[in-house]
Image (cartoon, helix red, strand yellow):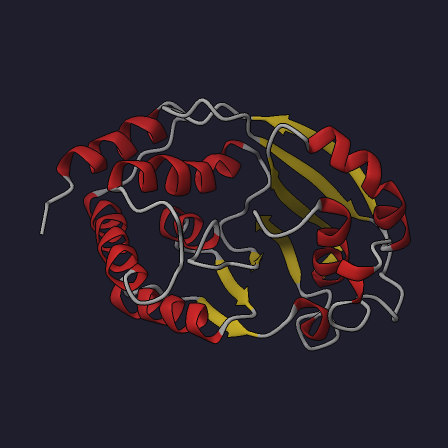
Length: 241
């Protein structure tokens, strides 16, 4: 098995451009994460990105780009909606181990992988939860989080219904979006308002070694979400607000 030394140097170099340093323990966690991802991906389709260098750039650095913002507090509660193979939640958790993190996904196979990663990397204050956002948005997780993140899951107007109900008042929804962020935002204004949110801003971020356009859309929860949202599973996608 390759030692991934050059990939780990690439990761450290990328993070240093943002003023983020990681110690040897965290480097080893990222290295083992790549091994697990590549091994598990042979059995379950977790990601189309399978080259270690591209995993570092397109998954790790892309996920960690949100840490260039001032939103994160070391001891806050963070929810990753549609975590998939653990992005962005697990890279954020590795760099900020004091965060309380919940990884939510609707696939049992992906949740099984997330649990394997949590055990193998010896991560604490983190758990993977199987379920749909439309259902869990009415559970004990409703209005329980300081920050909700989501990456490559759905158009923003749909994501808002999945994510905003989980936020405490004053909490932030940080949505990772590409070049169409402004257009998606325009279509989401009605949903944001209905769900009790307000648009704060869009931050364009240059991800080191990547040529892709990268934006974080920031939405703050100002009012309680009406009790009937999120609607039943599948409804947000079929009939977006």
